[in-house]
Length: 340
Picture 1 (spheres, rainbow, N blue to C red):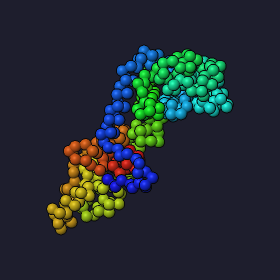
Picture 2: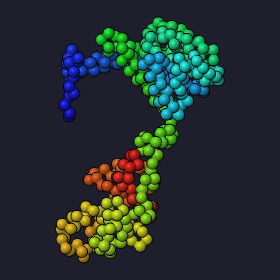
Picture 3: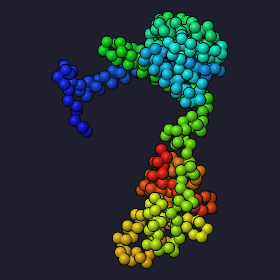
Picture 4: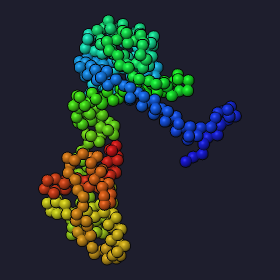
């Protein structure tokens, strides 16, 4: 751990922060969050979730300030689940972007607001209503102007902000995020989203790769394979062992069926035990005839788990077909290089 940076004299009035103070803050925040969980109206939340599930058009989320960031994040979460959603800036909406609401009652607008009295949202609501959208407010004050102009309101119970002045939105935005993400998962379950469908929406990141890539997509094959016969002398196969970048030799018979594997670790151990006798030893005499193997249709992420499984991790897995014929090799380096 590096040393703490030094501060100039201008910062000498700062008070020290210790672990006890931090722990007390976390415990207080936990207390405020528990207040939200214990007082949330689940029937109201169920109606909200069912309403979103029935929207045939697009679900637009909006908000200002920190609530706007939460609204944008929730909309992006739903999009990643294959649900038609988008963020609508309340300011830009009043300068032309509200045209996206064309489509009548098939759309919904969800307003995230702690107070429910934000001027920008109150200006947007009647305009969105005029476009035929179904309006939903998600607020943390019982009596507010926004809920009066919306078709549905969800109350997010808020004891107070963690901020010592009860002003900075640090607890209210947390419960907004928890509420929105939990409803998103409920919608995910209700829509019977499959792993494949979810992966199709995340093709580039590690999430998508772990759900899409199979061993056959990342394995080496054909001329890339470090193959040899069991009767070949070990010393004659050193170039094959080192040049293919797999850290091993794959020992096969005339039908390309796998007999065993011989690793660079096996080479070192054999050399230490046999000395000059290694010049007379064949690969078949020293190979592992019971190596871990894998099928080409197994998920690549499962191949990595198999490499790491007890009793000891391995760096590669030969890939075999149903007839025990060698068709490829998947390496740990290859999986890492593929982003897994």
